[in-house]
Image 1 (tube, rainbow, N blue to C red):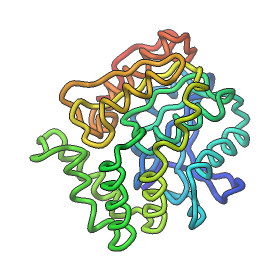
Image 2 (tube, rainbow, N blue to C red):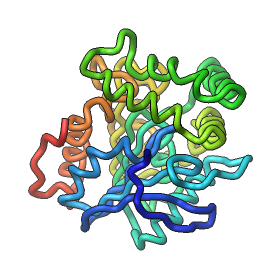
Image 3 (cartoon, rainbow, N blue to C red):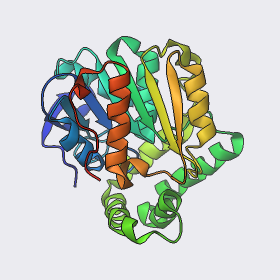
Length: 281
């Protein structure tokens, strides 16, 4: 179940979120089919030094369904409305997968609202073959539900066989995907499958410091995608993690927190001043 314990009625309906700590704002955005609980370790880690927000995107967790014809802009508007309600003029954004796509697009199209970006496993400019594969997954999900796609998703994310130390987290994700609202999941996946280049023409406007992270063996959020994003943004770099796949930020939350902390320290982020490294692992 989502960790979100508050909600606001925004322009697109109810948005559920959690908020902890005070100071510089860091906003965490989950991937498609999941919810704010995937960021639990980061929320606990950074709440001692920052104002941390993690929210459920449209149709996920405890947030309302998006419009049937939702576009990426609907997800960006949800984030903008949430920042307005929370009176956060500018934030550091960190997202994973679709959440990273939302965060990156938001930073590119609303650069005045973002002063730092850490994007884990972002999709960008899929090839025609990659786009076709993503659309096939979206159509299967819409037609048959998450039960028809969940095993393949876990396999992509963790590889086969799943390592013993990853089984508990893989089981969590398996359970969450099956429990996801079927309409919300399917509609979001359609947006995820079709919007990876929707903000490409505006990447040069992404002036905030940015870090694009992915795994060496992520088959769909590839190293080439993170490198391309870093090359097209104004002040960014890419980190490719040897041996990692799609769910690095969840399976190794301490290492993910260290990457965020290091990035904020390098860019002068107040959230990590005097913060020890080595979050929950």
